[in-house]
Amino acid sequence: MGDLPLAGRPKKENAAALKKCLQRWSPLLLRFVQSRADHNTLLESVAVHAAPSGEGGANGAALFDIFENALKLLYAETTPR
Image (cartoon, rainbow, N blue to C red):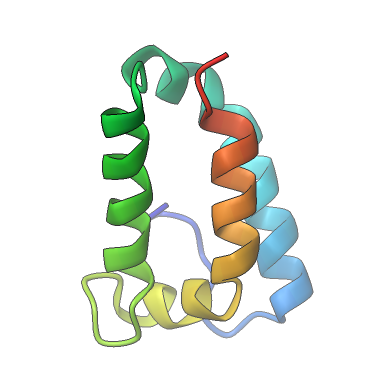
């Protein structure tokens, strides 16, 4: 998600861009997310990057604005089936 240009864009566009990104990458993520612990690690990584003062920089602040959307999408796209 670091390459996803979110900074300076409207929330609605960011949510759509995030959804498209996760739909593209979810098959690969599902190869690595095999347990609840893996899933929790993935979600924690997103939380760290989405924190306004976290590792995500400007994208992190934009991701923070759509954090609820990000969690729902990650859960839907990467929950082991």
